Image 1 (cartoon, helix red, strand yellow):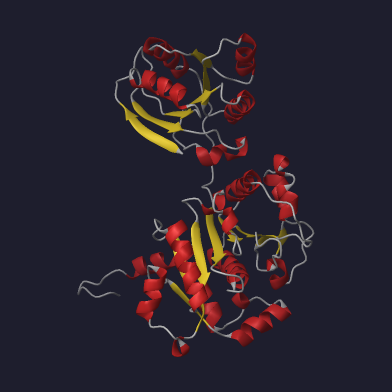
Image 2 (spheres, helix red, strand yellow):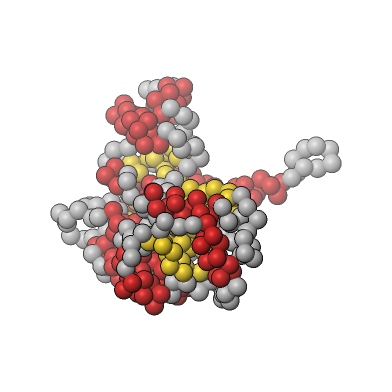
Length: 403
């Protein structure tokens, strides 16, 4: 996780003030470099306590304003070399490395991939100041405009059969159509995901192809795995065959990183995959839609999941009461709220006949006019900011009433 700190100082030896990212899994070495920076460098230094899992994740990790990236060469030399090469290939940042070893061969390898300075530990503040002064006068390419990282929406069920796939796939279609932006649906409902079946599409490739070829997963490879729905939604389906092999978290994280780099919105049908809680699927930036129903078992499961995994989330946790029929409820609203530890944000009306018919005909609910589709479209409008924009446009008249 990154740590940000304002480092006092006015710059030394003409180095001026640079914005620096400091990447170092080893805390003593990283802190030694940070201390040297504190004595000679003004401005913001952001510390990262781990390497990215791969160079494809660097854009997610590094902020736009970083001018210099300082990398620990010792914790994993091969990955550090790849990180430095990726930074220098991109061209708008300067890469430096630091090491506690005396290894001339390794230092030469870092210089060959583009490292501008090799700093030896222990490091004196004067040596750091001299290095910063040297790199401050180096020419740099103008940083190309980079698209914002796509928003991640994860649909998770309190138990099987809550309607996660129906809501996730129709939400994704609504999001694509309402926003007009690039939207991707990924089916993580392994081993029996059926989002593609519900949408009436036949997928040639699946998440299996992405996971088992994660080393070559990039923009072009991901695009080759996708199936396009008639609504304009891109879909990465679940595999058509049962698989017994566990997917490494690194492969999942890589897929999500590449997907968010290339799509404005990424919607994931996670089924009831609590085993993925430690992956990037549920990181702090993801909006989680917890799908449940008003039943003893569902509310009990929801309570346990919220208490353990999502207690600290505010708007990033959206509770959805599916198949909601207020006239037949055995519990009052206050009991539902107490069980969930907070109010539910969404209520999807029960219309079993429509839902079943659309599944059998592969005609998505989102493309029809029904109480369910209206509720799902409202969720999609909120997700892409349309509701807030509409509310702001209303404004106020000179008489103090909303127009």
